[in-house]
Image (cartoon, rainbow, N blue to C red; front, side, top):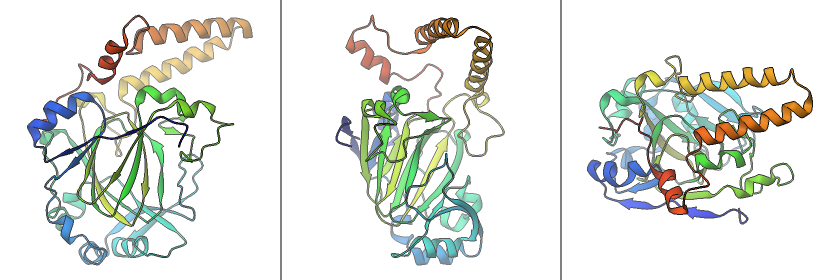
Length: 322
């Protein structure tokens, strides 16, 4: 979108684990990693090969009649199809339905034959691994803007995909409902409904086959399949294990402490409802001021240089991969 400041996500070539952990991971910013050894999947994973190897194993998928999937208004249906049927229909050049496979999984357990073709970059310790998820989508399908609470790598194996990302610090400009943005059309947004959206800085890249995108936790991302494509999303726990909800199969529930804080906030807001409107306004503003003072990484008293440093420094609670 022309009204938004747009930044190209930087690309790094032929990185090894040490360089990733030293130069990229601490910055907490998206990065495209090119020249990674993803294994024979880059040559093997044609639609025909996937249907042969995946066979009749059933997978849960999203099916929509429109290209922009909207989770908030559920403009898609949940269906279960044999994997080979799903790949066949998703890869059709002419289609009236749009298909997306994004169920939680461990490829090595769900599709061991296919998992053997894909080499997961060894950027984290084995006990930090959470999931490896197929990202298979029809050409033209656009996935809603959302964030994840775990660090992840999006490996593009076949096809091309545009990814637009927004910093966690632009959350107030994204009109959030839970972990998702209400702005469905990020390229031509309704600025009457979402006037603040133009203030969010847009980070953008196009993933080619073999590219891997590092998406730090809490960074919002929106994907658009420029062709039928196959990818793998690898998530790992970068916070201490007890920070996460143990009943969360997808890895997208807020950390336990954050969920408790949000629940406490809701209770506080209900308490404010007991006051007259002018008092609610006054004490609501005081609460906002205290929250900003206690939690925001930037302070108006700091210099812009310090602000940039604060924005890119990892939290002391992060567990360094590996």
